[in-house]
Image 1: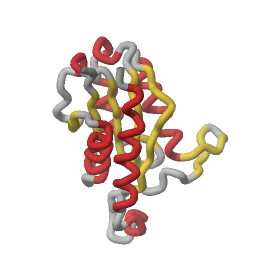
Image 2: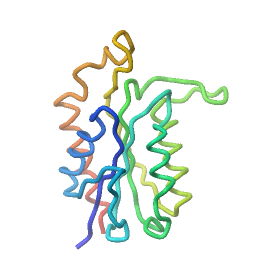
Image 3: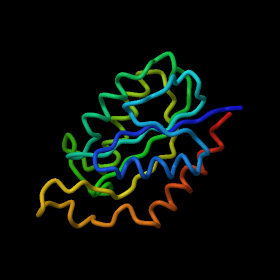
Image 4: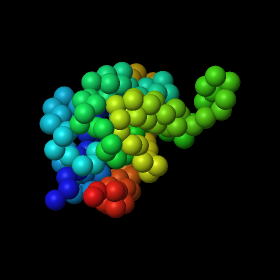
Length: 164
């Protein structure tokens, strides 16, 4: 039987909670970026990271760049992120683009370099770490919400069609 896994990196715990819900919906294993099992044992993978300053976290980039190319080659993967404002518009090289799309593009570039096939389905959830007591993260208190967790499970379930 085909196996799937959800792998995440987290700072405040929000990305871990969302990853667990995606894994629940998908019926997949769950792993932190610190304890990644042998990915050759998996047919489908979901990778998630939190965002900082409009792109994936340094830890997210680092763990994805260290992944074994042989284990990813030809396999379908999905992406998800958590961020304070994933739908915020920013400028990148003079072009307006959603913050979440900047992150997805970064993740996709890293994973495709490793030979993975990144599928079109992606998921973003509000969930911000509050850096300072007066910082912007304070307006995201209470996120992810129960509704966002339900959407995470639903996203995971929607990915089942990609498991061979």
